[in-house]
Image 1 (cartoon, rainbow, N blue to C red):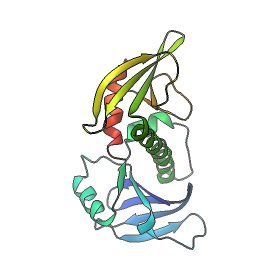
Image 2: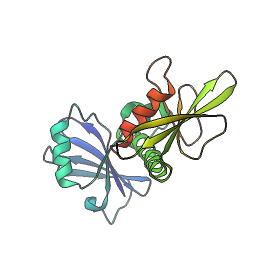
Image 3: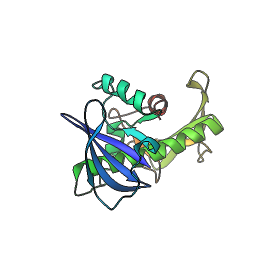
Image 4: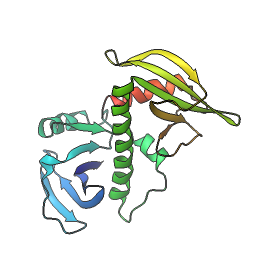
Length: 198
């Protein structure tokens, strides 16, 4: 079960997923108490305490809100909005909140998998297109310092958490973009920073 927070305004809006199926839109007060639940499908169990909380809003803008959420939910994952929007531009639903939540959930599931791979291999790879070739820069990660220890250049796909740099999109992997040209090491550092919040 997942609860994805998508909007912060007069009310905090969240989408509750049972598995990967959007099941309810929940409106919360600023004290993070549910005030209205709109079911999207029949639901018997709506136990929010068992849900993984995924926040899809800016932590810088809503620092106090996240502090309250941390008190209520033991684990919060923060999803960078621009990464989700870039990777899943065609994900749509008739309700805007659900569209955002679906993008956030898909991004979260890939990032969680990458985080597990990173812990297992201590490696993060970045794929970059050079002409007609794809080059893989593999970074050895110091997990104690959460930083890059060294870089290896490869021409074959490595056994590691893998991202790509825009405009190269690999199936079932996230693509990052910051400037017109993003260096592999810059992308690796940024992705490491994002993974800290998963």
